Length: 92
Image 1 (cartoon, rainbow, N blue to C red):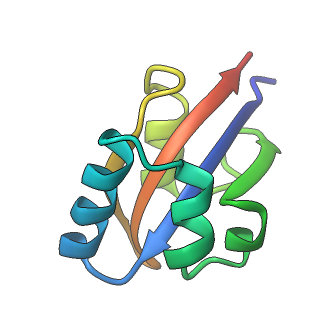
Image 2 (tube, rainbow, N blue to C red; image 1 turned 45 degrees about the vertical axis):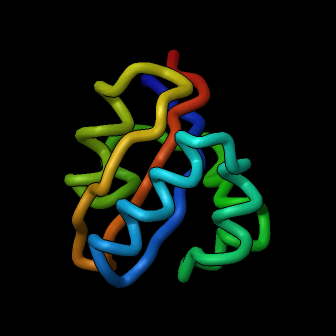
Image 3 (cartoon, helix red, strand yellow; image 1 turned 90 degrees about the vertical axis):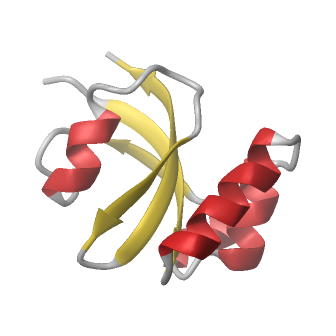
């Protein structure tokens, strides 16, 4: 089964998500931004979700994780939990 390794951050609004993406694209460290702003418990690890397979995350998240280019900031991705930015670091 295909496995992916990814990091993400989760916020309540699309506007905040876009603002954080702009900061990261301008050079801010993804993990540092996740630690400061993410609403997910993974924030303590800089947003690191570890390794997981298809179907282990919500469908909207899975779709991006298993199709997006590696090491590029993706999002905002809207799910039932809020708005995510994510980076897929490996897949195979």
